[in-house]
Length: 358
Image 1: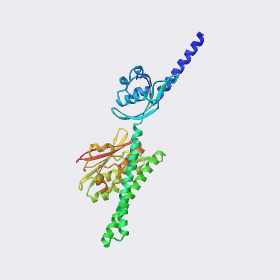
Image 2: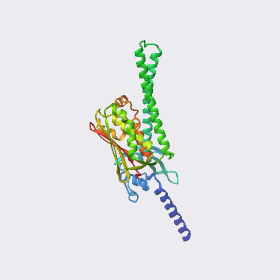
Image 3: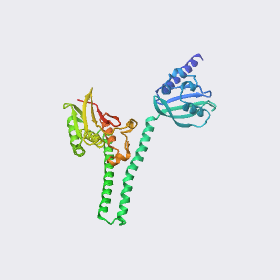
């Protein structure tokens, strides 16, 4: 009997250790609470989520461990509900986080509810991506619908023969052409984004050692006509020997987009500076203008697709709202990132940070 008892105890200990190992290895947070709202079991992920130590949480009430009132209310609801419940809960720990909480009743051998089992999963990034996708669909629909509505209206007017004068006829056709060009620009930029993302996912970007100064000069050459039109000087400050492993065509496209943006929002007879410098093992390419500047509240969202600081002004200047998003994706495809610094009335500096400088 002693041997059998010892064997069973060893089996129970082994099973408990296996269960603890499984719970400790889970990325999701798991908490079991009894009917008195005291914690029966908590894994490492859940304890870290609420900034606690797992060992110190055992036997404590949920108020002592979980500081979020919304989370406490969810657990209380789960204790009085015999059916599983699910809810997204926003908590604030240094930054806003969205936690997906799911609960199920905890039953004893006689199927009596003795508590609740709650599983937590941090879905902040997932929900942000979902919101961005919804915003993107709404924005692209709006951006395409606006010119289409105008085109339809002018075409119907011309079809009905309500325009007698040749000058008016020509003016209407010019407006239609302008909106068609705008639609074409939006489609081209969307296709460019899709190609960059596809190449990045399939590792098809043509990386090669290239001198940054050569790419900068090519970008300036492409933007020269627009700069001349507004009498804006583009200065270049670039070390001649700086070399990076890049796709020259994509980086040139990113520079052109940043220069084009700077030229749009700069006053005539001003200066735009294209600069590159090496910082540790990285190279930073920046475009500095002395234009209207951007309010601080807009900076975190500037690189989102179709995000505009001033919608009316952006459309008037012919922007598609995708130029900065393309720059961001090109930088990310190179393993880098983008940044922006700006002050209202003083101008802006957009930077591309690229790793792997040779």
